[in-house]
Image 1 (cartoon, one colour):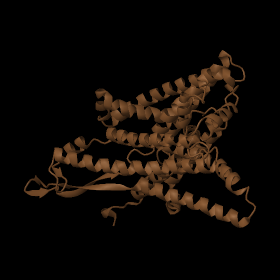
Image 2 (tube, rainbow, N blue to C red):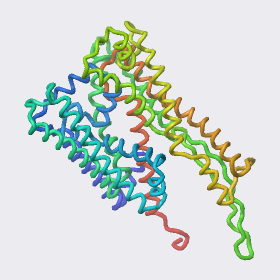
Image 3 (cartoon, rainbow, N blue to C red):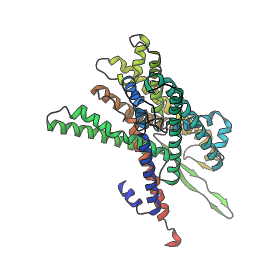
Length: 439
């Protein structure tokens, strides 16, 4: 990785792109620490730290801590990511959007335009909900129409700015701009999380030998998890495809062998995000109605909160983890089913005079792809469950406390870094390729 970056700086165009990306990220981090006028920056920090679980911690990591500080970039790029997911789902339900998606570059630009409009709408809805819903509970120092409007305008404008910055990085920088912004936000929370781990496991120890041993164990766990996530993100199942030769004039041409790569982790971190959000939604809503947690319904809500799992004094609440695991697996199958259509792939192979060795074209090919896809999804979902659950187990058993970094964050960090490095290497290959005419 470091050699790739070192070689990239030797190419002027790529060096300028890297510097442009770095400067944009500096501006974004400055905005993440710029508070909204009239807002109590300690309100959400105290409220959510005591009453929600893993979903808020992950959301706070995605915003780079700006949501906890209630800065102008408090919503971060989450409205844009949500808008992209909604648009993908809508292309399945609305035939016109599906046709628009297949129209090439013009269709892609139109879809991006719709995504931007939806992003602004979601940002406006979320900012209104927070400014009005929490404004009179302590979020705003003075709950007036002016302070509410300022808060709404600041958060909506901040989300729109990050959307613009992400697109500019994609165009003038390196990698996917939205992913890069998300990456820097998550990485910015690492120092505070390392400080929390130090206070919990190292500061209380008096023996140097014990401290060294604990530090080695923590480092080994982090390295092992990172290696596992790298394997999960890079793992692919390659399905061989053979294309028949075609008659061109007086000769046969076009016979070739190819492959269909199926990523093991096809859905990425989206199933974990969906599952965490669905589990935490009732818990967050319950705060508005001041639910009595001693009742049966209140105990069910405590069971849904991941901060109560694997606690020695209340083991029954860990049943909620089973629901969490089931949701991750279901969302992994659901999201992959709407992004990869075996029947469409089989028809495209047949139209191109191709076939999978040993499998007849048409429906048999579709059924074969479907079986392989289900097997691959199960492996990917199992890997996601392991990465998502292990930090929760450790946090519950050892009572680590408030951590923004989680297995979900690690998946995003590894995935974005690998994707960005591959993009840099491909750009370097294009610029260094001379071709046979220059040899």
